[in-house]
Length: 399
View 1 (cartoon, helix red, strand yellow):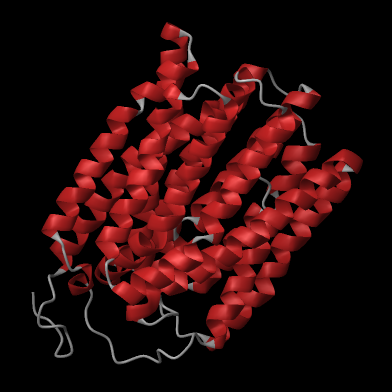
View 2 (cartoon, one colour):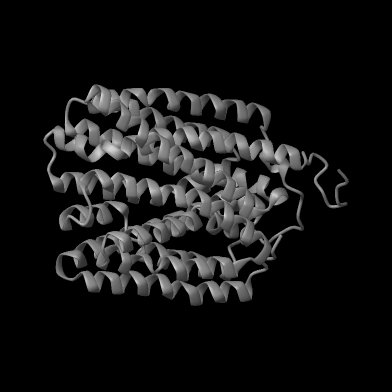
């Protein structure tokens, strides 16, 4: 393959980029299988250890907040030290090995610490991993590369809970469910070790670009952080949706996980389709998806069975966007050598908006479903003007 004159002399090529994306995708598949499997039973497990509903809610909410907020520090550390693989491996180790240890937890306090450790591990490894992944996606297309990775991620997110459900069906215990997740956890760590040995310098997967400003992030970056933060603030967490389904008896209890599985499946397909569209059309795809997915709230919280199912499809499309093209666009706005910091700040901001929005929607749920829906839709639609401003100021070119 002929390379442009400005290409890094150590540039590895498109084939290597794809192999790297696939390897990281396999890691994400096994890791999602591990912790999404655990998350599907963590609430009932805490309850079985005599934890109150308040404890369950606080552990879940605090875990999500830490899982995003701590990315600010881990991203900065990765760029500062340049030890992307070391930080990624350390984060994955904590993230994954905390899960099977839940099988040994004798009290809700120990279980809560392990659940928080799992989220902290994810916070440690995500900015460094996304920064490395961004190098590879330069050659194959940002949207397509991140979309492919998200699709593999969601295969694990669907498979993990199904494995745990099968274990519960045959064994009937939460501890056995956590224990069996040791296998995908170990497989993920093995694959990431292989990836690190094969590609010790992922930056060589990216064609060198002209020098970029590194003293700070430009205005489009900060506008983008606010835009995605508005999406996060208005995006209802599935536990709240599941709570609504159960409280209103909108659908049988055993159908609730199936609705979630449908959303995760849609997420995977949407990530691939949106990734391709983003590479061709750019920012308008993100704006269009934001407008479409904003419609999930009235369907889920005010509709009947069929409308709620449609709402979960739209919810899945939005999640697919958040985990693929949203990340892909960000890579174009930050200097190559500061991407982990850029992703860390972005994720910390998103986590804060998500946490505050989730808390407000939980409060609104107790008073008025209509108010909840109005807030959700309005917050998400308010993101569109910010995306429009970004598209006018940033150089986001279709690939």
